[in-house]
Amino acid sequence: MASPFPERGLARLRQIWQQPFALALMGIALCGCSFDLGSLMPEKDKPQEAPKAAAAPESAVSAGSVAEAQAHTAKAQALAKSGETASALDEFNRAVALDPYNAQALYGRGLIYQGNNEHDFAVADFSAANGLNPQKAEPLLGRAISYLALGKVKEAAADLDEASEADPHSAQVWTARGQVYERLGDKAKAAASYNKAVALRPRDDAARSGLARVGG
Image 1 (spheres, rainbow, N blue to C red):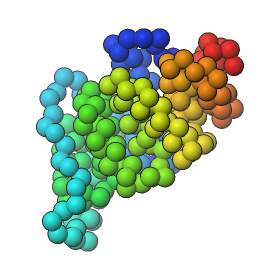
Image 2 (cartoon, one colour):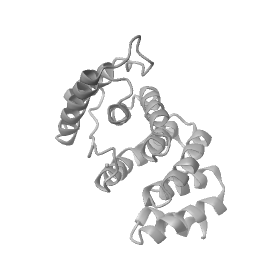
Image 3 (cartoon, rainbow, N blue to C red):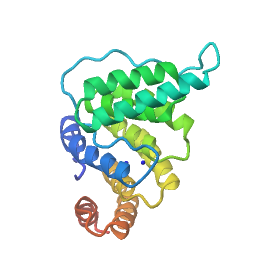
């Protein structure tokens, strides 16, 4: 385009993961990946409608619809970067309605749902984006964060395993993977992940702290 784990307790999990991983995702966007969405700040306590399914449309998506969807996606990205998440969500919804195969719109909408603690909706959008771009780490990282908020730690670990293969040079992914395996009690995998994160980004305080905790 682009926080140590609590030992237990979903409330603490959400507190620790919400802001640091918003920054992590922003870092991914700034690293020049195709999902260039910038920082999506959460708009709290606003109920959202269920996301429109990314199922195959009854008729083929036209070239005009794809182009219009891209325009709505670009507008949504700009709104999201400005903190106007409600308006950005509307634009992402329009983009997905026009082109259900728009992975950027699905990923961006997933980030907004995640910021609003609508994690089931976020998982659905990240899953759709991952299906369209299975070699991208960002949707997997996003889905892992929402899985963690839902208490699905093993599912998060599986996503981060896959994300680390898709992008072995992402310090964010390795740090997150270390945190997940630390939570699962697998100190060997946690230490290996933290070591990789520190090798890629020596000043990663979360990874360095995690490494100290697990004795890597």
